Image (cartoon, rainbow, N blue to C red; front, top):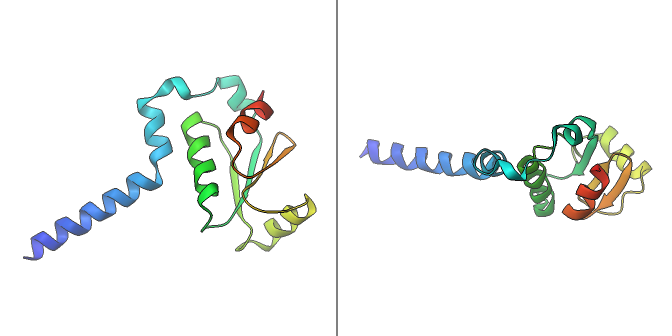
Length: 116
C-alpha cells in the first residue's frame, strides 16, 4: 500500500519537473529551433515577471526553446526590480528588455527581431 502511494508521488513530481523544464527538454529534441551562437552571445534579455503570470511562463519557455539566455526579475518579490520596471515605463507583464528594445506582452516575433 505504501509503495503505491510512493509511486504516485514520484509520478506527480516527475510530471511537475517535466512541465517546468519543457522548453529545455524540447530544445534537446528539436535543435533546429536554437538560434545562432552569435545571437546568443550578443543577447541581453531581461524579463520582468510575476510568479502567477501565464504569459511570463510562455516567454521563459520560448527563450529556453531557442537557447537564449535571460535574466528574470519578479516585480512582486524584488523591490529593486519593481523600481527598474517602473523606471522603464512598466505597464503590464510580461515586460521584456531585449538589447534595449522594450517589449510588452508575449511577442515572440518582436523578441526575435530585437535579437538580430
